[in-house]
Amino acid sequence: MFDVYDENWQPAGIASREDTHRLGLRHRAFHCWLINCSSGQPNVRFQKRQIGKDTYPDYLDITAAGHLTAGEEVYDAMREIEEELGISAIFDELIPLGWHEKRATGIAGGKPFIDHERSDVFALHCDLPLLQHRLQREEVSGIYEAPLEDLIRLFEDKVDIIEASGAEWGNDASGFKASGTIAGTTTGLVPVRLKIQAKDFIPREQDYYAELFRRLLELA
Image: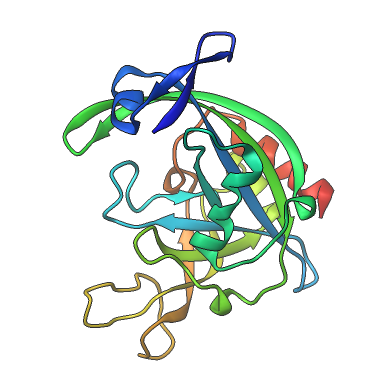
């Protein structure tokens, strides 16, 4: 169940996730981007959504994100960082970047949806090696990082493709399979190199990613 809001973002009741997206009701979300500078240059991490997700399966996305359920405040939703990435953090460690409102339409499970959400956006410095993340298998198929300057150029249409380092689930009996160049055949996470384009990320407003990555570069 979600808290839903009117056109002024004032509380307007509670609705199920299904009804919220079916009717395009306003609701809230949490976004957190991880910044890593351990290689000597500022990198940002991002995840790939599992192929079984109902919306935007197999797309690249925010490092950790999730909806606020009914009665939650934004500090409650930071549970997504530990659930999805295996990182323990406290709210005071997050760097607030303001909020972002979007309204998107699409098809999920053969049904149309309208996603009208306002997201509180944060950054978090993280030096944990990629292979040491404990990814939530049902939600996340891999985690990657790329230089912020490369990503800015990508979303400013100055380059068509860049390369990222990553960690993905390896081949195992469950049927999950990493999609990059795999080093080794062990189960669990394996290192990969991934070539990415702007179209590989969840579609957002034209300048959203470039502006966001410029802000993260200033913080780094």
